[in-house]
View 1 (cartoon, rainbow, N blue to C red):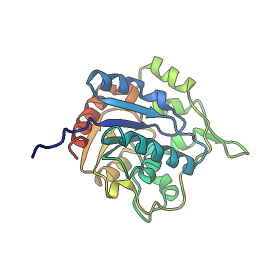
View 2 (cartoon, rainbow, N blue to C red):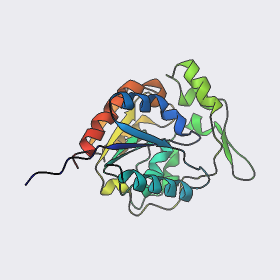
View 3 (cartoon, helix red, strand yellow):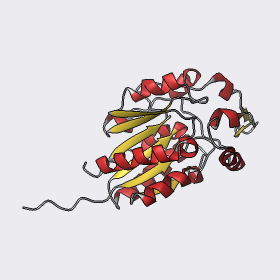
Length: 233
């Protein structure tokens, strides 16, 4: 009896707070060159529930094309954990990887660098925007022209890190990997390493919070290798 042919993996990329799908362009270009299919989605950033539903729908659609490697950056780790149960494999990139029973919002003081927390402004209607000082925290090792473009594309957001714990985070049942950004000035590296200890495998990059700009080649190579593993699941 012959084995059915393996389906090609599909890499689904989820951005973090205030960003959009375009932040992954340099990574998707490299994945394409390596023969790996990928797609980056725009989270609505209107609420955590809306973001979670966007991830869940994208994973469900992607799974029709092949095993999904779900990749989440920073805040994106929360909706990916809440809505990524159908993925074949997960990669968290300097991303929140919540424990069951743990309030993500209560963890924030031990998650973000204090200087970065001062780089956001909340309007009367609840919309959060970044101040110019956030640039140094997010892109301290990013080439200046890329940082300029990133700042021009920042998005306001109304989504909030949830107070309520996630009862069934996807990483409990879906194999996972973690990318630690060791020179991060936005998310404390030690907080990332605590999350990385929960994953099957980890990679440390000597980069800022935005490796899709500061270390796209190394990140793409790691994701291609993880996609190959997902194809065997």
